[in-house]
Image 1 (cartoon, rainbow, N blue to C red):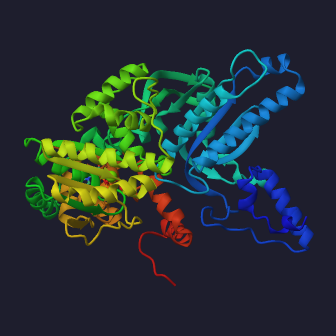
Image 2 (cartoon, protein in one colour):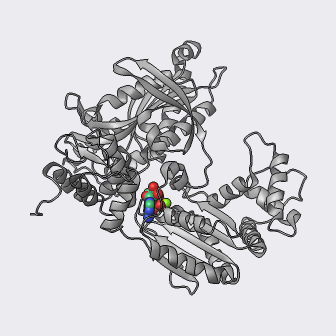
Length: 567
Ligand SMILES: Nc1ncnc2c1ncn2[C@@H]1O[C@H](COP(=O)(O)OP(=O)(O)OP(=O)(O)O)[C@@H](O)[C@H]1O
Ligand SMILES: [Mg+2]
């Protein structure tokens, strides 16, 4: 029993104990000790707060299909076991994506993403969690004849957390607002085994997922018909940047020096002295945009473009960016047979390797394609296998570089898995004698081990200056002039971050506070303090949650204005 005293909230969470039960256990532990314990705070979870709080959340509601019918067919123990397994799967998956499982309601669950910790991609996390839950539930074993299925509804919006009219743990986490209601209505619209998302969520998803328009529907409790989309799967775009941001690319603004720096590196690179450039900077500062600008600039010159994209969801999945690149290059289709995949794989390998048959089994194993008798079985120890795979990837790369120069981009290295980083290490060595220009982008939290090597350059992107910001605003407005007062606020609020400039300007245009006249816009009414646009909410909250004390200041700041004395 003595270990019980040492259990923390996080331990209980890791054990899968639900919030309500956690609270009860912690209270019991406190009573054992005869003292009230302060709530534990961990690095990953700020203490849950007592005050009601306005948050921008994505809400997921998930319901087991046909559970009433199922409960008639199964005896109560079996039914209980099914529900337990279903709950456990939902809890595990929600946790994986850092969501918050607020409630089990019979055969339904309610989860929030963006609370108590916000992430810049909470909407994406929610949809990924939903897809995983659908897959996990379909795999659950029951005595029922058909596999189980769920329906999922997802909506995003501003909500108030902490409904004071409810009791205990539920009170703290109850969410008030239209969003949960909308998610529930969408859940009812979804086909079994699918997800329906609201327009508010859809906006945040860009092209990350394949979506099907479900049209508009009248739903209870909401005056206007609501638009809904069914999620059909993850789209296989080449880069996160393009999936989220290509909708309306403005011309590159500023960054001339940086672009020149890259072009200067290109010269020796193309002559066979491979160059690496490390591009770092905060989210939205324009790393991907700069890499895209270079690619555009040299599009007319013969070269091979290789693109690798890391993902926050696969930080532990070995070589994932390289696998995804090969799959795209090979052009696999969902219904390809293994033999067709192997044919396509061999065609890709033939571009770089001289002895395709010798390396094909390594690549087939990497891409998890069964090859049966087609190649000899590899009898290698795991260590040998790993070493040979990395060597084969490098040789393939070198083979390609011998044909024509390569422009390589490796995006978001802060999310790279350890094996990919090891391969990058080897690549940095190998490119010295090859016509390769490699751009590695990453956020400031990543510390690249290659800085300072002779063929490695560094670019740290800072804020745009005022002039560039104003130019950017003008691109977004299509050259129309904004009232000086509005421009001033945009410049002040966005601190030279291009992502914020784009989004805030779009939000101002959409807010309906401006009237168009012949050369621009004028204000219709006194300027309201600019609201933070929804697409930025999550990334701003993510920054603030990482620095909890700052958050309180920001909340106070939001109430009293941008400038206030710190005393
Ligand atoms: N110099 C620029 N000129 C015009 N638009 C820009 C510029 N820099 C960035 N943008 C725009 O700002 C947005 C954010 O840029 P980008 O996605 O490149 O940021 P990032 O640094 O790659 O962020 P992340 O760390 O999230 O990957 C994009 O829509 C991009 O087109
Ligand atoms: Mg980027």
